Length: 222
Image (cartoon, rainbow, N blue to C red):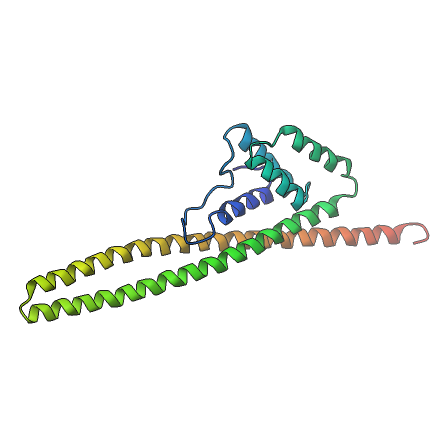
C-alpha cells in the first residue's frame, strides 16, 4: 500500500502485523485493509494513513475514522473536513503535527512490544511441545527395538506407527514456529524503522525550538 507518506506506510505495516495477533491462531499477517471493501474504500484508507503519517490528525481522530472505514462508512467528505482543519491551522502547526506523529509512533511501538511478548510466550510453548514430542519419539523408538528383541513384530510396528504420528504433529508445530519466528523478524525490523523515524522527528522538533529561541533573541529589545 503506497500511502504517499513514509510514516503512513510504516503505520499501515504495523497495523497489518498487529492484526495478525493475538498469537495462537494463524501466523499469516492480515492486511490492515481486512474488512474494507476494495476500490474506493481502500483508496480512502490510503489517504487516511497518509494524513495520519503526516501528523495532520490525532490518534483519536484516526481511530474514529478507521472505525468508519471498517464499517464501510468512511466518506471523502470526512477526510476533507479534517484536511481542511489541518490546513487552516498550518501556520505554526509544525510542532503539533510532529507531536501527533510521535504519539502515533509510540502507540504503535507499545502495541508491537505487547504483540512480541505474547508471541514469545507462544513460541516458547511450541518449542516445549516439540521437545516433549522428541522425547516421546525416542521412547517409541526404544519400545520398538525392545519389541523386536523379544520377537513381537506387531508391537514393534505399532510403536513405530505411533512414532510416525508424533513426527507428523511435530512437523506441523515446526512450521508454525518458523512462521512465528519470521513474523517476529518482521516485527523487529518495523520497530527499528519506527524508532529511527521517532528519533528523526525528535531532532526536527528540537531544531524548530532552537530556531524559535534564536528568532526571539534577534527581535528588538530581545
